[in-house]
Amino acid sequence: MPEVPDSVLSNGEACPIRNVLDQVGNKWSLLVLLSLQGRRRRFMEVKRSIGDITQRVLTQTLRSLERDGYVARKVHPTVPPTVEYWLTPLGESLLGPMGKLVQWANGHFDDVMESRKRFDVALVSSRLLTR
Image (cartoon, rainbow, N blue to C red):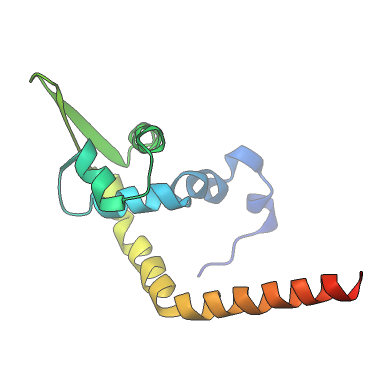
């Protein structure tokens, strides 16, 4: 990983890392992008593939991803209207880096869960001792 100077990290909204990760780094955006990988999908297909996302959050996420150029959409003039979503070339270019993150998450999930469990037990124990 390339070293990033503090001057870039502390540059607020002009920081490309902060700015891009603010959008694609949240769990819903990542799941939506993965849902659209290699296919066009309608709204409810995306929703079903993710499962526990609300319609409101999915709508906001798709709009935000479209605004940033990761996702495109087409409204077909049918009754009711049919809307399709797919990844743009910019969105497709994220699949490689995202794939690394997904691999890491899958490979280390048990470690993270165990660490959380140990932390939570220690936290509860320390609170009991300070009473």
